[in-house]
Amino acid sequence: MGGQPTVRRARPKDGETVLSLIRGLADFEKLVGPDDAAGERILAAMFSPSPPFDTYLVEVDGRAAGYAIIFQTYSTFSGRPKLYLEDIFVREDARGAGAGFALMQEVAREAARRGCEEIEWEVLTWNQRAIDFYERLGAERDQEWYTYHLKGEALSRLAHSR
Image 1 (cartoon, rainbow, N blue to C red):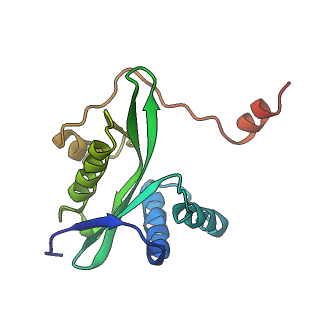
Image 2 (cartoon, helix red, strand yellow; image 1 turned 90 degrees about the horizontal axis):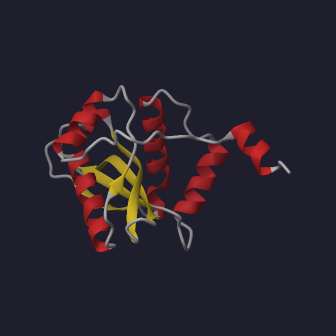
């Protein structure tokens, strides 16, 4: 891998490649990736007329090296939009080639185009390589907020409670 990374929006023909990268991220994070039904839902949403998120693909030497998925949120305190970086992943064999930087730069450019005040994302506490990368970019870890999840049975119970 010696070429300059190039970033572009994913196109329908990239669908299976993006799903493969999503599954690669799940493997890296030691999580269960999307099954076939979830993959179909992801692709249907990704390439729908009004997709709920934007998908970027980074290529190095003409080969998919990684991806990023973002969506817009809103700050009621500042009255400005924010971008949420749902996923960012670069294949292990493509790391160090500038693909992650190129993806983050494109996400930052998109945030600027949209007038966003910030980009927000999560990183696993054990992923020191990613933490170091983000901090080299100037990102700061939030010290005051915890991330909570309401899902599965707890979500259903709350949704259906009286």
